[in-house]
Length: 440
Image (cartoon, rainbow, N blue to C red; front, side):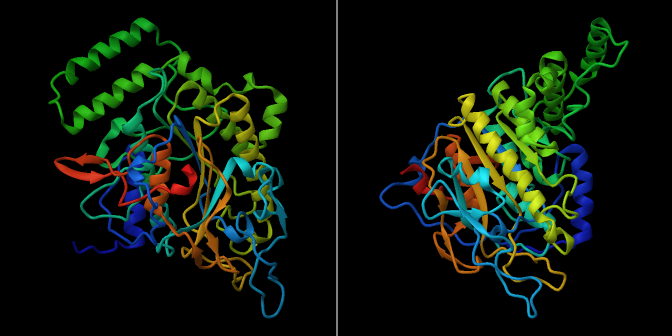
């Protein structure tokens, strides 16, 4: 099939429109990178985990792997000419031979409970929006199919673990790449933009009594009974029914973070940490998939898009990630939820070892790092080997479909199973294979 690329403005206009209804517009295809090594002696079809939930930490902007989870020799952004390399010193972790950035000390002590996948790769580096869409959906942009996000696929396949909560929640601003695509509105997300107020629309306004609410629902139902089954309107009606079912204090109580000990909240840190704490509470309530966005407040000036001043203050962002991620792993473990919960740290692409004219870093897709923790996997601190500047894969490349397949398999979902876009079968991943080493 022949495909073409939309221009940037067109894509962003589609994204803005889609965010309001959590459904995507038409888009075009791109490559996804090198595939992972295939399992030897065992079919990937048999790699099935027992995890029940996924917390997906999104580092929007493009985390520099060489400055975080795949450090190399020190560089120098102030030298003339500039010397390529890591911006910080590195430290040992709990796993022999695996080193992290000096600003990740707490996570380094947790290395036995996680695996940094250092050889993720793809070819979409010229545009943040396209790369974000690829990492969320596992596929390039298509002019004929609106693909669902990984959160919506998990919601579709597994549903909520408890009927009193949604299957999929987004803690951050809504975006087209997080939507349900052809799966329909029922498999979209409930979202909130700050931990103080919780999700909007799930508490009745003052003055609306239970009887008035019931009357409104009866009036609404009279018109909806005429909606044809299996139509888009019927799918939207099902989403409305779910929202009405959730509305009320039983659902909203999960957002009362002041119930948690103050010492625990302090260990989690600022707003991003509080989002991670909320994610742990939502896992305990039965939410199947929670995405937590970290590209908020831009505490270093640019977030993970580390150009210019953002590079100089990047350590503040890394430290915030360290506190939140390490505490989340500890907290899940203390609640006996870590083996049941896969924690993912994801970003749209990495950063090259070379410094640009402003002292920051450009974009890189040839190799970058993402993290898996918990989920009952056999962790090893790190997986895959990169070259001396973390620019090229030396051993064990992992494509985006492979990374998605690993997440799905951990959650007991067959990565090769087929979804339906109307009458058309669409495999859950685009030929992805799980990382077999995490099961052996």
